[in-house]
Length: 326
Image (cartoon, rainbow, N blue to C red; front, side, top):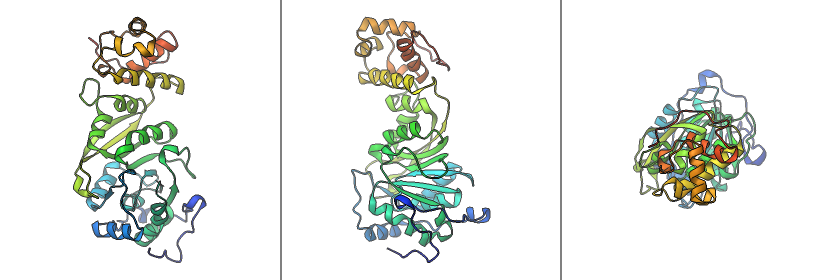
């Protein structure tokens, strides 16, 4: 592992980096020395790393893809960025010149320990902008320093949805961002009512934010090369259709029930949730929803209305546009 320069910032609590005096605005946009395929393989050897499929370890080896991600994220000089799964630092190096601070959350101890030295070697003037946290993003509840306002991350394929929903719930300060996920997951996260990919991830993500596709990413830009392509998804947080964690919990419960048997009508699919098919039909009518409709036809607003019909006897606190229901 390359040695850090003498003026490197010493490790902070939990293995992170304590912020040093930050470079001035003229230094913020300075191009970083990004990683290429040979660099990624060299760093992996130094770390004794064998990429883990379980942890979704597919590392970006194409500098142009990193530049594209940073450009699409439209970062500002004063942004605090939360990055999940920085790995060997490919994206981290691209983010640091474009914002004021990067909080990188890494679950692999070897990678978490190596990242500060990699940044100090390739972008020594910006090393003080990095904070590395050794943690599972699904268990993260807070980060040291100013709260992050932007999420930019290459999320592990098999954990992308639970990580994103967890961060949405726990970090209300994150108001916009960009994530790279498996192409199929990108379709699901951004699908609307009536579209083939619309399902549980679509509805639950829509509770927190407006999500849009921001283009494809070919599998060839990763090492190891995965067997699927990826996609970029941007999001902007918005007010939920109803206030409070309790109504969210009830809404997510009815969403799970509605899509567990998505070919069935809501009257049948929600019979267990409501207690019986007749009870489900009554709740659906109270919420102004046709019992013969299917879950794939309902927006998150209509699901929230249905949850409110059960918990409060009506649509109390639920606002937003309705969708056409046959």
